Image (cartoon, rainbow, N blue to C red; front, side):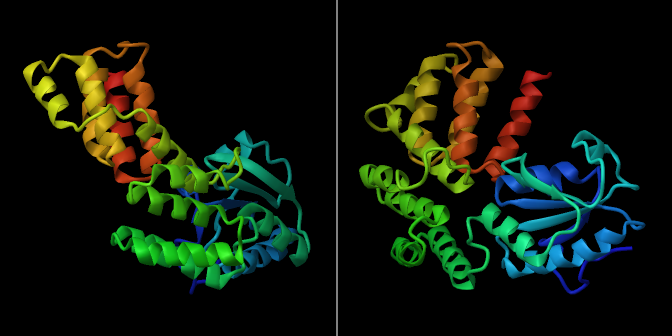
Length: 297
C-alpha cells in the first residue's frame, strides 16, 4: 500500500528503503530539508497522517522533500533512530535529524512543523520562483539578473538565507569580497543553510589566496612536482579564483604523496573546498570518492 499521489514528481515525495536511505535522506538533506515518514500498512493513524503530510509538502512548493519508509519492509534505519511507535516523523537537515514527532497531528501542526523547518519559505510561490530565477541567472553569468531576483526576495523576506547567500555570491563573482562579507553577515552566525555555509567557505578560501597570479606557482610545480608547499599555494590560488577542480587535483596529489604533510593541511583544505563547491556538486562527489580511495587504499 502507498499513500503517494501518482501524479506527483518522484523528486518531491518518494517511497524510500534502507538501501536508498543514505541517498534519498542523508545526502538529499544537505541541499534542502527532508521529512521522513516511518509508517506501516497495518497502521490506522498512518493512513490519516500520510496524505496530510503529502498535502503539506506539496503546498511547500519544493522547499522540502518527503521520503516514506515502510518499517516492516525496512527496519534498519527505523531501529537506528529508535522508532518505537508509528507513525513517527523525522526532519533531516545537513545529514542530521533535527526535529520530529510521533502520531497523527492536525493539519495546522503539520504546517507549523514544515514552516519551522523551512523558515516559513515553503508557502511563498513568488519567493521560490524568484530564488530559482536568481540561481538560473547566476549559472548563466547574468549577475544583473541574479542581483535583481535576490534583492526582490530580500524586499519580501529580509531574513531569507538563500537570498542572502545569493547576493553574496553575486558580489563574490564581481570581485567585491568586502561587500560579500557584509552581505553574508546578515545570515545567522550558526546558520545551517548550505548556501550560506558554501559562501562562507568560499570567503575563507579567498582570504588565504597567495599574492599574485597562479602562473609563477604553476611554473614552480612544473619544475618540482614534489614541492608540496608550491602545490598547496597553487591550490589556494585556484580555489580563490573558483577553479575548484584544479585545486582538488593538486591537493589530492599532496595527500597521495604525503597525507601527513603540514599537519594534514591538504586534507583539511579539501574539506573546505567541498563545502565551498557544494557538498552535492560533481566536484565534491568526485573529490570525496578519490580522497577515500587514497586514504583507505
